[in-house]
Length: 262
Image (cartoon, rainbow, N blue to C red):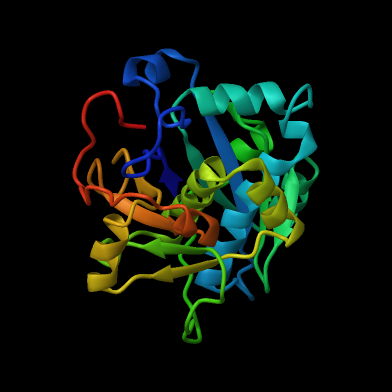
């Protein structure tokens, strides 16, 4: 399901990639990050596994040498991050999946889930083998209780929002990306070396309120699909960010002020 923009963490610091005027971001050419999840009819992945794998896929692409410096994907990644941050999740199976994996990209696997992430493409410039894939039909379930998150980074979802699995996969990617942006180079290197461990869980209602006031990065959606504009969807709780907190956020989960929507 399409998920469009991320928004800045509550109380984020000057110089953050989120600090761009809305007009600057809207004027830039618009790109989208394609993610394709493999959903075979006979054996679909568990929902949480797919969410966690999608989040790691975004981190793997951001940290790939092809996305930095003079790498072959670097210009597209820069253009994508200079505009509104959009991610689209589509599904594939059998021959569709084989065609998708033949295109330049990276396949990331979870416990059972497989997600392929591709370098950003223009909104109207999708490769035909990706453009023909379906957005709908990404409904997934967790057959077993997920239990408590593992030690380490956690992407906490808003318990009051209902989203499709595809939409949540894109939001998990947003959450991983906002954490990545706020980490130091040393912290990024350590996370990558560990294989980008992370958990995705739904917060309790009281816990969610505390998380949005904590100063940790918060994802706000632009509201193009499924949920209202400005809705807080994910809080990125990385140990390195929590240890560096110096002030509480404002806890606002309504629309962002003009000039800070992403």
